[in-house]
Structures are given as C-alpha cells and as structure tokens.
Length: 215
Image 1 (cartoon, rainbow, N blue to C red):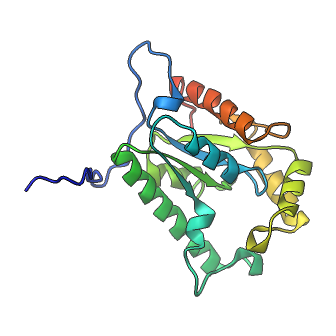
Image 2: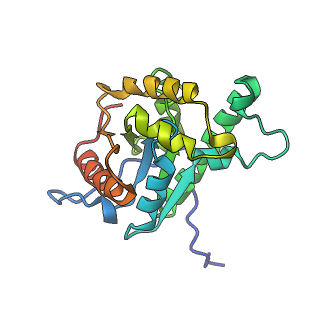
C-alpha cells in the first residue's frame, strides 16, 4: 500500500548536505530550506530571534532549542547551576544529539530548522564539530554577540534555572569573544530589536549561502 502520510524517510547514516541554489541565482534565505545554528551567550537573545525568524519565513521552519530539549528530563534533571559534573555534561551531549536528529528529520522532510546553543570556540570537538556531525555539512552557523552590558541586563530579566549569576554571564561572554577572527559571521545586536536582528540574520545567511564559511 502506498504511503499517504507524506512522510519522507530519513536518509540512513548520512547527514543532510548543503543547500543548493540554481546557478547564477541570487540566494534567497527566506525561501530556501536551511539548517541554521544560532550561537551566543546567555542573554544574547538567541531564542527570541530564532523563534521570530522561524515564525516569519515563507517556507516551513522549525525552531529547536537546546535548553528546551535538555529540560525534557524532569526527574533526575542535572542542572549545571547546581554544579557542573559528569551528569550535566552527559545530558548536554544527549540533548545535542537529540536536537541534531530532529534537525535532520525535519530537513529530510523539507522543513528548515534553526537551532540555538551557547557553543564555545575553545571546545571545537563538542561544539561546532559536534553540531556538524549531528546535522551535516550544510549547517550554517551564525554568532549573536551583543555587548556585556546588554547580556547582563537581559539575564537579569530571566527567572528559574535559566537565570545565571553576573559572574557566570561575564565568564561566558568573555569566552564567546573568541569567535572574533574565527571566520564565522557575527551579529552585534546590542542596538537592535528582535525583528531588526532577524532581518540582519537573513542578510548574513544570504551571504553564507553564496559563500559558505569555513569551519
């Protein structure tokens, strides 16, 4: 009996490749099936921008938040704020693999996706390298990096286990500065609201489609 569900099986063992555009066509990120990784410190606005960007595209698009997937674990949740240890590290790794599988499945079924994660430049194996293994070489990374004062203000508005201490926010922001000079596109959204940042993200992605960054 033919499959009438519209489901497209996930290609076995092979990550989804880079998106292609017709020869000499101006890349249009708003109408292209893409996989985007939005990188940034806590308080950068990753989740807000990712949701807005996904909501306003002309093609089906999913937002996959690493923090949301981590918090699927209820009993036994390993909160890094209670101390970074093997359990919290293992749950981060598991969440990243789960997000990567979800992204590949969406892409295989013609649905774009944007993932957000605080990926550090000094941990390439579990950071960008891990996402590349999980999603595939077509993943387009973009760094969202406003000034420290901005991320401190935004973090102060958070609640629950997503609110960090000022010291932790400053430490994470300092490590994120290592992305400068990496070759990845960086957006300083210190003076931008969410819609403005999403428009800049589209511009950055258009350039990345035309000339993918080396990473």
